[in-house]
Amino acid sequence: MARRAAQEWNRGMVGTSAVPRDVTPPGECATDGCGRPVGTEVTPTGWVVAQVIGSGPAREYCSGSCSSYGVALAEVRALRDKDGGDDR
Ligand SMILES: [Zn+2]
Image 1 (cartoon, helix red, strand yellow):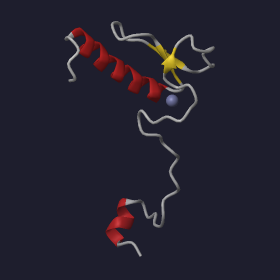
Image 2 (cartoon, helix red, strand yellow; image 1 turned 180 degrees about the horizontal axis):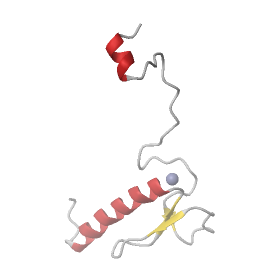
Image 3 (cartoon, helix red, strand yellow; image 1 turned 90 degrees about the horizontal axis):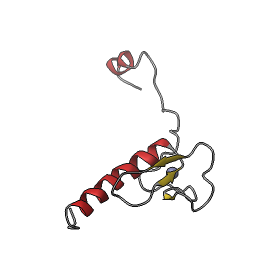
Image 4 (cartoon, protein in one colour; image 1 turned 60 degrees about the horizontal axis):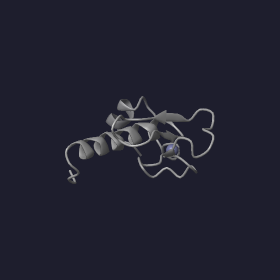
């Protein structure tokens, strides 16, 4: 039984939460082709194309969250290539 303070904080709701949706950690997307270079195949409807200048070819991602992660990786690659290739 939940304590009274906990019940008040939670508007009287007690019990077990609903099962959360599956969320794939960044970089571990299991969608086939997510992150491949653009032009490998026809880009599926709704996918996001992302490119960072100085960081190789544009890539396509199955969702906005995957593309955000991809852009972050591309930004790091661009910095590394610009600064002479060390492993920062
Ligand atoms: Zn994805």
